[in-house]
Length: 544
Image (cartoon, one colour):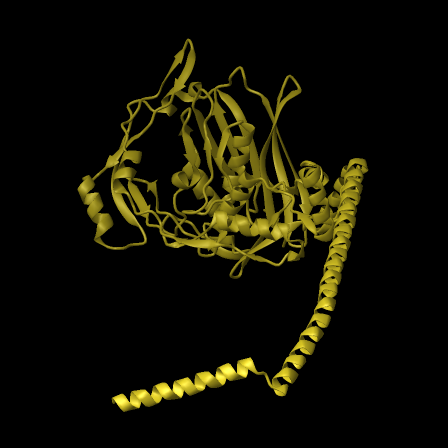
């Protein structure tokens, strides 16, 4: 910027400064007017400021009033809660019944005493619990009686639990329980009680009756041959899964006896173990003898061995799949047989039992004779177990058996070996009267004509066996005859000092639309007094 321009700027600044000083020194009328207006405005502002303070004070007073009301309400609410708490406490202390809102298995037991609740629940359960549970697998159908498996509910524990609701904690907890029960439904499920051992036995029996049940490999000796039959894949009842289904159905009163689908699993038969079979059947011959002091009888035993090497026997089994395999045997006879020592070996008749059959049915009679001849003369050592299927063997045409009526899936049809269960039944009863130990026994699907309910025993080769153990101190001998319409078994041995009189009691326990239920007991007496009573079986039969 030039010198001249700077001078001009300074002159302008001086002029402006003078004007400002002049205005400050000499106010005009207009400025006075403005000042007057400003003063009035300030006064008005002051006038307005005073009411604002008053409003603020009023607001504070209102807030204090609201807070006071809120405190009063809280106090009232607290008092109400205390009163309710005291009422609930007094109610709980004075109440001797189950509190309101409590149910057992859906049944309202509010305001009932323990005894009344227990009584009414027992009636409620009795009215709603079915007599039997129906089980189904495909076209196969059967049932299980709930009384047979001792089904019940633990009503006492349930009513005790119901009574203790609102009484099991401190005052605060109990009142909370009471309020929860009053405004919300409390339901107690009583514990279901079942005889699991009996139920498992029933399901195992049912498993053998399935139309496609698994068949295990088995063997028997016929003349001088070992006959081995391979097993077949099949179904078995899944005991645990089916038990849970049954328990659920029993607990569900709305089940209305809808058939329960049996839970099954596929099972492969055990492979043929030729080493095991060889070890089981191989034995040396034993001569019969007896001693007088003390008197003891030791019957003879035939020895047996493979007539071929073990490797050759394995080769036969592994060569190809067959319905049966034949291993040649050699029988090793003792020098002194039991028959050589005569009746001295088995001097006492321990038991006898007979059943009647129709001689007009020749095929059935032939089957009875064949089975009886297999068993006749069998000697069972002390501690030894008798197996019907092993002694009698497979019922085949080649063995001489003929077609006669049998039960298959609840129907009567002709089958090879029909009728031999009468031999099993007759032997079963003779064994009972000899007070021998029953190892395995299964009842028929229907009550047979030749024996009352729970006095029968059925067999199916490869699936159902009849077995008993000689639990006496001395050996026994089975003598069997089938002639003139009578099948008879006699068991000979040596009487012991602890022998008892045996009575068998069997009777029906109930009937339903489809089934008959029965029980059998063995009663032991000594000197005319009962010393023991043992449950032999609980059975279910289909009705014709």
